[in-house]
Image (cartoon, rainbow, N blue to C red; front, side):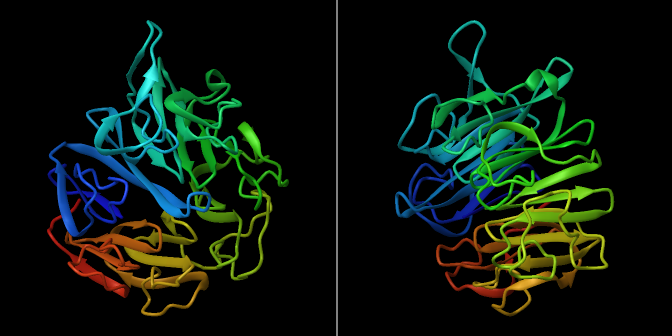
Length: 365
C-alpha cells in the first residue's frame, strides 16, 4: 500500500487495506488515491512486511500531524501504540507514551519511521532529542533492553540520556540511528550482519557499530542498512538481490566500517530503502538497485541490479515500498511503478508496471 501528502497538507492512501492500513475506517482496498484527513500532515511512513508466522502481510502506517505522532493499521504486535494489543486500527490514532503523572499521553515527535512490525520517533526532552519505539520486540529492535516481545506504548531506547539523536531508521527487525556527534548506532536482529558491528549477534539496546564519527544519515532495509558519510553511501548486511549496490550480487559484509561504497561515480543521496530494493537521487536524477521482480526499479525490466541504475531525470522525491516505488517529479506530479496487485500504484488498475505510471490527483509536494 501507499500513502502520500499533497501540497495542501492533506493525507491520501491507496492499495491493500487488509488491516485498515489505508486509514479509511474500513477494510476495502483502493486502486486510486483516497482522501484520509485534511491535516496538515508533516510526514507519513508506511511499514510492515510478510509475517511468516501468520502467513500474511502485516502492515501499518505512521505520520505526524500538529507535532503529534499517529499510527493506523494492524495492531497485532502493538505497533499502533494505543496502549493495547491486537485487532486493526482503521483510522489514524495517537501513539501513547507513559506519563509521569500516571496513565499515558499523546507522543509528540518531529520524525517517525515505520519498520516491519515496529516504529520509532524522535521526541524532544528538554534540549535533547530522544528516540521512542513501540511494537514488536522479538529481536530487541525497540532498543529498550526489555524481555518483552512487544510493547503497545512508546518507550525511550536504553541510555537515552546519553544521546542527542539526529535521525533514526527502522528496518524489518532492526533499527539504526545517528547521534549528534555523527556516531552510528544500531540494535535488534543481526542475522545478516545488518547492524554493521562486525558480528552476527543480536543486540537489545543501541550499540555503537562504527569506529568512525562521520555518519550523517542512515537507512534501514529488510535485512540490510545503508549509511551516508560525507559525500558517499556504503551499505552492509544481506546482499542476495544486489541491494547493497556494490556491484556484487552475492557479496555481503557485516561491518559498516568495511562496507563498500556504491558502485557508481554519482553522488546519490536522499535514499529510500524498501524490502530488498533501494532508490536515491543524484540531483534530479533517479537511481535504483536491488530486487526487481515486479519492475520496482523502474527501468523497464524485471532483472535484479547489483549497481545503481539510472532510471530517468526530473525527480524531487522517491519512496521505495514493498515491491513497488513512487516518486514526485519537478512539476509536482506523482508516479509509481512495480507490483500493483492491490492497486498500490494508484493508477486505477491492478496491473504491475516496469516503468513509472502517472498517479492522480496532482500536485504533490
